[in-house]
Length: 476
Image 1 (cartoon, helix red, strand yellow):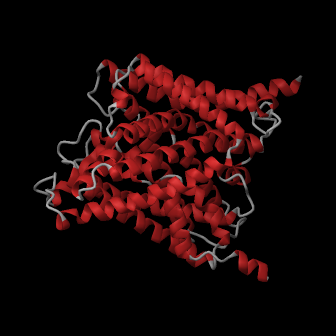
Image 2 (image 1 turned 60 degrees about the horizontal axis):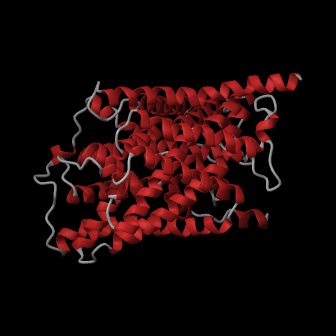
Image 3 (image 1 turned 30 degrees about the vertical axis):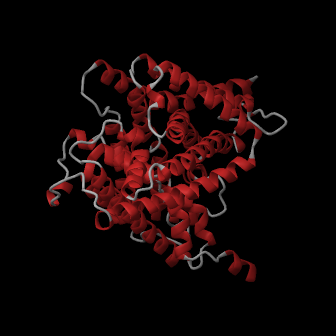
């Protein structure tokens, strides 16, 4: 009994702070401001009230329901819908990381350029093919690092992540107070209530996926539910606190961006270089030169490296670690002496290499390529969130079977409605996000659209092939 009490020592504020570091990042502010300008303030309020808060609390209930499960979403699906769909959920969770892995080396190059040269000129000095070739070399190197399991790099990454988190909060505080402390002029003039009201058209709708991408990943929080004191009360309180904290940072951060960058004339490369522009301007406001920007660029470089190494290894081991031989061929699970799934790494390399080099055939410059890959992530990554809501709907249907400590909504029809709403909204965001955010019906727009449509189908569709290969191998 005493041991159980000791295990459940997390309070609501611990949950809120740990979750905040897991879910949020400064890049979310920059990317969505680049898409929407100050209109994003309204969008943030909508997303947090009607999507993120129920999403986080749904994860809380699922984590509490399957507190002994180690496979996350795939465990939830396995218990409620069977091993076949559990395999597809696990496959989706892994395969949606492929565009993420292809984009990370680009982000490392950009961060290094700002840290070393103090500007964003590095990616402008070489051709797209040369830069993507270098990106591929970087990826291969860090795949080798991941196979070695360098724990010290993960420690450095954790320190860098905390530094970026602190600097993100520092940016909000310093930027919002700058007009009162310094003589800086606000870039966006004549701000009224109408400045924040979106014009609901097709262009606006295509940017929703980036908002969903920004607030996703709450399923990482689920292991904390059963380590929380009085989880029925304190966990939802922590999640509500998280929603408020993230909303405040998103809204104040967006307002700060509006002070620095004219909402009606957003720089074309803000999504690519905006984080560094922001800290560079902040340094100018307080007569600190490029100091803040360089510190952030170095921290971001280390953080991106650690995130890349972790994301190469961890999702793949989740997929293959508890693999069912009916769905995944044994050859794909083969490991070497150090426990690295060699063929799994080769599969990852093949898919990432294609996604790194193929776009160079139709996308002319690095800025557009970076934005395309980031937008592709906003289409593909939320596909894994769909399984969270599928699992929740299944749990609601089987309410008599499961008795978790924490229940989000006890009214069954209302709970079902919320689950269906979150699923439908996520699917809608993924669908509309496939349309490129550029002049329509040009050659490059058509090329990007084709890639955006093909990539999710190919990546998820590959998961349907492996059970056939496994069946063939098992029959021998």
